[in-house]
Image (cartoon, rainbow, N blue to C red; front, side, top):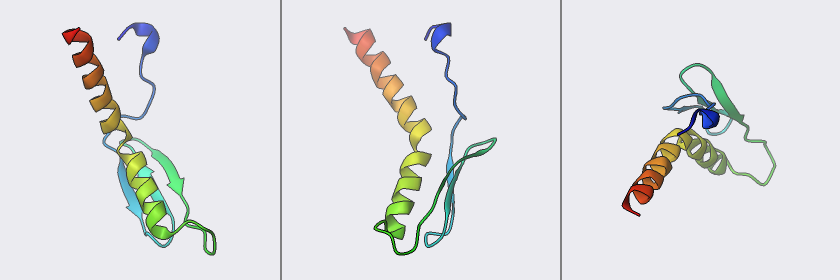
Amino acid sequence: MSDEHKENHSPGPWEVDGEVHHNMYVYGARNRICNIETPVGFFRSPKESEAKARLISAAPELMTTQKEQRDENTTTK
């Protein structure tokens, strides 16, 4: 990766914390990445909020896997 495309994100792993029926938080090593609220009476269920928090927390691992696949495809061509 060239210097012009340096990564600018909180390093993983990211962890989920909070209660499913209230706010869920995603934390990186140094800071809170995001807050996912479960509003009462809205269309989103607590399980949907939890699923979103878990997907967001997987972002660093997903990005690493994507880069490995990209590098593998570049090498084999």
